[in-house]
Figure 1 (cartoon, helix red, strand yellow):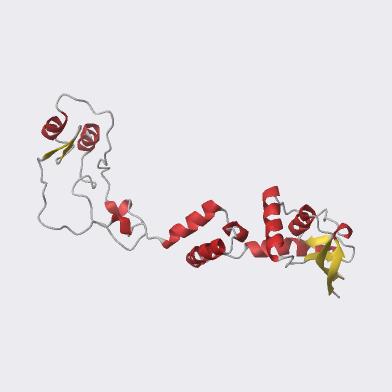
Figure 2: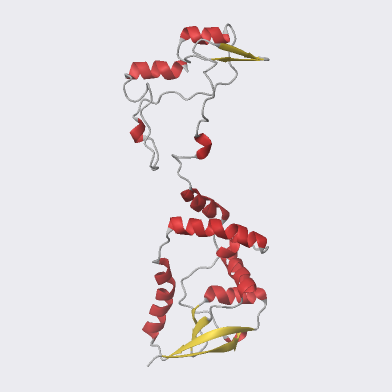
Length: 239
């Protein structure tokens, strides 16, 4: 019959389990220690009647790092050898089997960040790394509906049209087709560009390259799969 008993034990009376196959990095142990420092020792270490750790090796290492002498413990008595080993594996593996509601988690982290900042606390207390948080928060943004990409409403008639050449101090800005030899000559003359920023046609339908957002873009005016290999090579080489 398995029985449980809880209490506070001396840390030096607990022993790591030789059958433990869970690996704790120095970084993770420091994270656990930070959590214990902030919130206290909320999750006890689970041991058998001999003081051998069944669950909580990371917390044991963290307690040693913090210099604690007493820790909360739950003692499981009456387990067979097989049950002890199964429990050790299950305690770690069953938590891994859970998933995350990524959108909900992103909202929680987004709302939590300013609250922690006001309290002088770090979001790292959650255990999530900054790159992970950035990726999660990107779930809140529809990449196909970024407000910064919206073109402001035009006020009055357009002031530029195809064929216009704007002189901007030492720079020239031409409204034309980068693949048209005449347009290139009108802009560049005998000069050669030191750098070119271009978005050449990749000759594929937009449906194959657009994201997962709700907005569905139309195909480009050209370069959406209609170019022959020769036309495509000439277009890219010209740009």
